[in-house]
Amino acid sequence: MSNKTAKKRADKKKQETRKAAKKRENPSGSGGLARKVKRKAFAGARKKFMKDFKSSMANFKKQVKCAECNRQPAEGENIDGWHINKESENIDLICTSCYTKEESEETNENSIKL
Image (cartoon, rainbow, N blue to C red; front, side, top):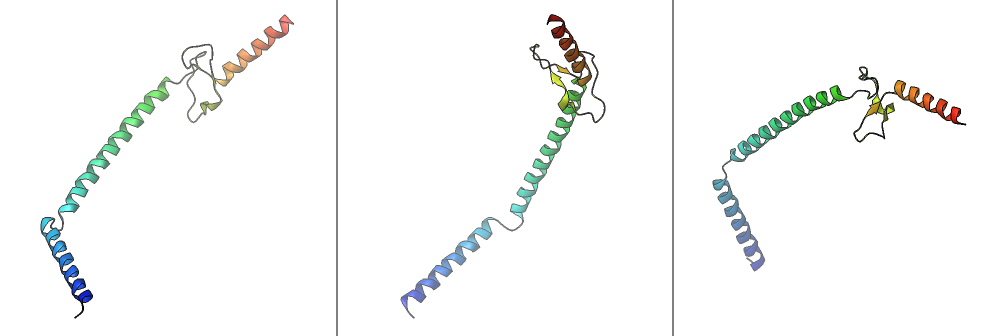
């Protein structure tokens, strides 16, 4: 038998010994339990986050209203078209109907000045 073959056999035996020692340290099934507990904790945390997020968004939706007429957006109405009152320090939204009224009044005032 050559030295290479003897060395390969010795290395293989060492690897098998290491694997057997690891199996004795971590019997099968013990790692799965830890993963299961982590997964349950993560799922619970995600569920709690989503519940809190939904309730905070519901509260936020209740606060959204027009600064001029106090009208809340209709169900499914997109508020992207609403304008922000730049003169205010807060973020005041102005609905499209109120904004067009203000815009037409400003136009009338500008035409009167000319």
